[in-house]
Image 1 (cartoon, rainbow, N blue to C red):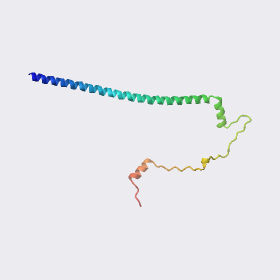
Image 2 (cartoon, rainbow, N blue to C red):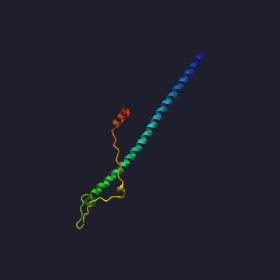
Image 3 (cartoon, rainbow, N blue to C red):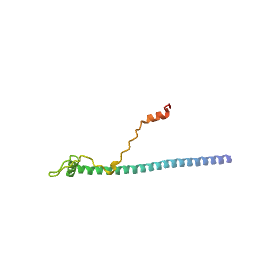
Image 4 (tube, one colour):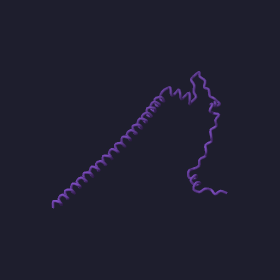
Length: 131
């Protein structure tokens, strides 16, 4: 009888230890997944902060440009460059020929005509018979 109780006692201790180990493993797995989620959240936060900083800089540039377009200096710049206007007493010079730059002697290389992807694929799969 004593032997049966000691066997039961050992079995109960083994089951208890197994339950504790299983619970610890479950909690460690849950904790690990929370750490992974926290790291992903931090990385996303940094990415979004960089995006916000970029957009804030763009906003500032656009706000400065808007202020410039409201100024008299912008109106004068536009009138001189786009409308080719001049102040009284000034003469507007309009070139009749374009001046060539030193790089102008190079002729641009013609772009290769590209065919649609499906034509290339068709030719690869079904080559034309050679005659």
